[in-house]
Image (tube, rainbow over all chains, first blue to last red; front, side, top):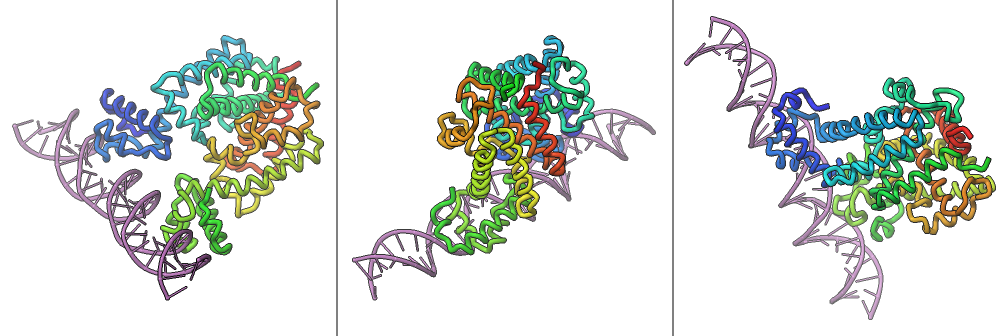
Length: 204
Length: 204
DNA sequence: AGTTCGATATGACAAGGTGTCACTTATGTG
DNA sequence: CACATAAGTGACACCTTGTCATATCGAACT
């Protein structure tokens, strides 16, 4: 997390920093991003950057988290709208995600994030589903799910279901960027994947 | 790929370089690895390194690929042994993979690789299943699969089935390292995941 | 206005990384 | 032996990062 100093900053300075960082992380992936470019663009001295952030990871994950919390909120409201039906909710959320990356301002930021997805990035984006089963965020979402639809004996298996769908969701998102898929193509692929997951890949 | 010069090297020099690189990539993830450490350990001059490799990515992916081709071969032979039954094959392969990372020499190399998994790493490891549907490697594997067991209408859907299982497989492997799971725990999780994928997560 | 003090700002700097290149050395061939 | 081609070498230019001594700010209190 950024240090308190960052949050004490006048809003325009804070936003100019954020915008400079977005620009840099859109240009290249995290590992190649340079603090020098960010501070040049934001016109702040090097020492100040370290006054606000631990390092470039700090600001990167801050940006990612800020955006992800929006996604998570929207996921939850869709889940409610869909009466706890998990698969339509994921498909609808997926479409929403694809729409938001049409936006030039975010597109390359996410391209760099997804093509260099690692454990931490993945968990930052889908933070409601952390590895901790007793995670309170997960528990909150779990309450909204209609488990009667699912082929599970116990609430703990819901965790597995969500984990599977999540893995497939990320893979599909990565492919959007890797193969430069159109929205329709990607949604088609994703829907087919979820269809198989829903009904099972083996014959009955 | 390494340059020809590398392959022309006397075997002991080549192996000392490989061993030095393994050591460095076991110490830290690719992005933090330093060529300086590799050449110091292998006792070769800096210029020579660049005679053999483009950069550190070059040698890293070479090592990864070398190991992965073993995995892929073994996957195929298990698939034959299991009469083309996909899910037992994946489970058996998963166990094999877990066993091989018990080996100290590989464990931390893979830990660093999996926790920093990105698109390129994932595709290097599972290179038989590339994004190209008409990929010849995939076609070869496809021939070995018993499609009668599967709930699919068309061969092209096999691609989706494999993609789904692959995504879940990687996620499970990452969790081994992230949560320091034991072999048994991880196999239990993985089996449950594949069970759900096999039979479907929704009630019939 | 002056003083004080903690918080914030600043940029020069050390340490360490990368890739290159002019030059040296080795190797093989007519 | 001489020549051409391949391989080996390390100093160097150029970047990065994180730190730290020093400067500046601003609120609080005489």
